[in-house]
Amino acid sequence: MPGIFLDTSAFAKLYIAESGSEELGNLIRKTESLVVSVIILPETLSALRRLVREGSLEEKDYQELKERICGDIATIEVVSVSDEVIKKTIAAMELSQVRTLDALHIGSAIAAGTSLFVTADERQAKAARSSGLAVRLIS
Image 1: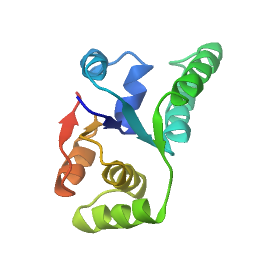
Image 2: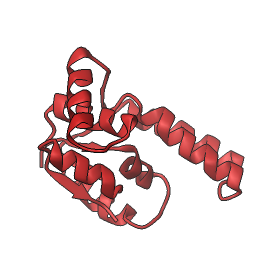
Image 3: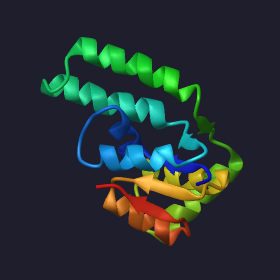
């Protein structure tokens, strides 16, 4: 399978074992490449910091995950914000009731020409489909 795009809700499942993590792992083993938006790192680390604040993740585990994620990002295609990404993002926002950062993931995926958009967010999946993307909802 050609490159697939992971939004943050899917990407985080690579590092936190939860519902859908195994399914995502199986999907990734079949793909040629992974593609993410430039916002993946701050969004993922923000989610992990929330787990630390809630007491679900120890600070040392957070630091280890952060280091691992930063290393992994170096091997993944990262889509930067460009004029084309912004145009696709605005189009996604105009087609559906999607939040700004979610629309940025959709715009990035469209601009990158990925074969599949992977998310664990139902609203995001619906918006991505409305924008013409093939979608896999991981649950």
